[in-house]
Image 1 (cartoon, helix red, strand yellow):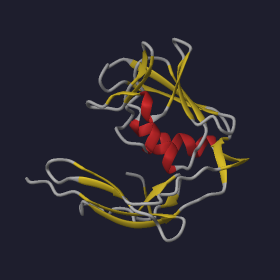
Image 2 (cartoon, rainbow, N blue to C red):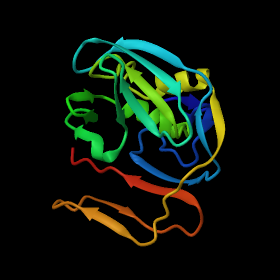
Image 3 (cartoon, rainbow, N blue to C red):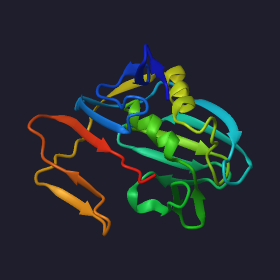
Image 4 (cartoon, rainbow, N blue to C red):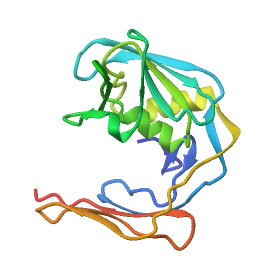
Length: 196
């Protein structure tokens, strides 16, 4: 967790309504930014180890043209894999995306950092089958994004508007639900209740 004056921060900015340490609950309201699409000002990289493979992993975050979205590139294979829900090939112990025989695993911390920093367009080059785990959080990738800088493009940022309630529930009663908002914003209430 990256803290700024005791508050959870993303890309150096406090997050309104972030979970208080140890509570297991987050109630928050974050104003949605419509505005313009954002990318990185410069390329920046790191080297680490893959959590599951134990292999050396080199990762480079690169700026991308407006509208590109987030794309993972297997630099060793020359294959691009868009970070889209329909490219997810495995979720056991990590999130892995794939295209044909190419796959990249443990992308969730990089994705969290990019989303938290409001990056819409970037190419994430990885030289093997897994992103480096670094310290096990998104913080090292947030640091890289801060160092590279953020550039705002002229292209408008897209948004999804929830028009009606949507709820998914499993047999145990656990659920996720989206409700229409009264104003452009993200309002979240999360609770985790472990039986132990």
